[in-house]
Image 1 (cartoon, helix red, strand yellow):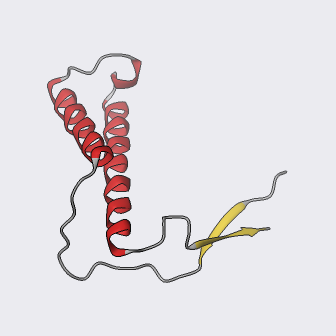
Image 2 (cartoon, one colour):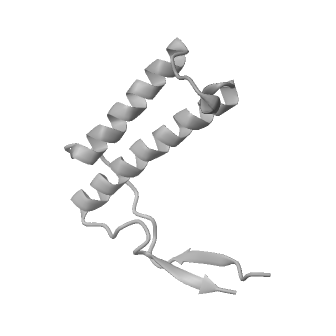
Length: 95
């Protein structure tokens, strides 16, 4: 049996307390555009293939696209605020 991999935060989670303006970089625009295209295609029933045959599979595709957009936005906010990268403020804990 392998050891469980865990991480613990080494710093408190920064929270946003006021409006923030960011400029989307090429990667964020690409992720947002992919989400919008997928969302539109799923609503029209235009996504074909095994992955999109059930509503659950379609929901998983859309959820993954939303995660990609959220991660791109989180990276931009962290960069603008001078916060560490996502895993930089976590420490590895071995069991």
